[in-house]
Length: 556
Image (cartoon, rainbow, N blue to C red; front, side):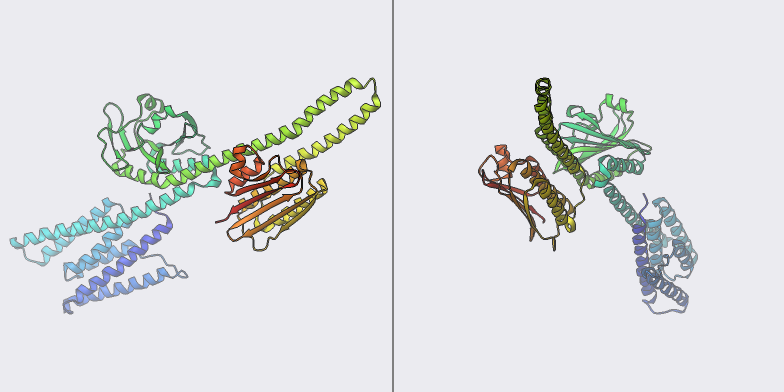
């Protein structure tokens, strides 16, 4: 993995800062014992290079200029020159550690080791040429070789670790960014699995999620080059062992699965090494053509619920790969959990809305159509005897049919999606109120002020739907002559009150939404919509004298 451009800029800043620090330290070492004639050239060289480094750092930091950082080959060239000019090994080491650190950030460790070996050999040759050979000095030469090689390799390792950390941070950020609500579950899963398969050079990535409510295992699978939409496979819980590997507390890897295999793993809870890690059943391995796999567990509310698996790597998976997959799984767990929670909420919302539509159709239009069939059958029998009376009754049926057509048109209109914001909520309520007055003949007073109202769009949309549903119920069932609607925002909550002087509900008293549920009373659709936005519903009814519906929605 390569770091993103932003991460690369941060790594370059670290190299720039390290360059300044090491050059200052080299200068201090050269000046420590005064300026000898043979050291003047080295001091001038380091001072000039320090000035160049300072100017480069300033120009890099100014957005208006934004020049590229000094390339690594400039440091390598300076190190080569300083090898001949440096009067002491210590001052040379400072530039050498700078180059090794920069090489670790820009190169892989194999090239860093080659660089450390080459510099060590060159420094040893310089030392041998400058000092006569004495056997007692062999110990110091060995120490010089070992120390130089170890120091360069260590500095390069630190640089490589910084680069690896930046790359991993960028990769985790990109994976988390793929889990977006607007993408939907299927597309989010496809993007994440394709990215994982590519990052680990495996043929296929699999996500298995156990839904305890439905007692099902949902499986998403995507190959490294998958471009089409993927759909989850749903399996009974008892058939999920192929993906969950019996124990969800085991983080495991199998590079060879035949015979005794070649596997390793640990308990994700305490890191204890597993002597006999679980493996995929033989039948499942054969069906899915699994040759190797890695598997890590993700959680929901602190409990293991699923697996992330990578199948058939192009090379052997290492313990480092397995630790990295485990870290990725921990990072993705909350995002995946949120997607599943959203999916459940949407399913419940869809079921609730379907139930409301079915209820409206059953109690309204379907009952009317059934009545039409009965009346038409009666009129057909009366037609030969009293055609005039039949004509009068047909006119009444025609009027009823016209009314039901308007009701059906209203129902279809209500099903269209709404985009409601704080700024236009009150205007939409006023417009619907005018229509309600014209169609029902009921007086309506709307007391609402949109000035200063700051309400999320989702809450505005549901409040408008509740307001509209309440007026429809009044029009159909209440026989009211006057309705008062109030809407206001009070600190950290918004309140909607719909008050009418009709016949009220079939019950008397003041009840909360939970109490209405236990008694199987109250407006179903309004109760469900209030719950979806975390609101509190209260219904007051006085049979024969009206009813009041109050919805309070917290905004914090």
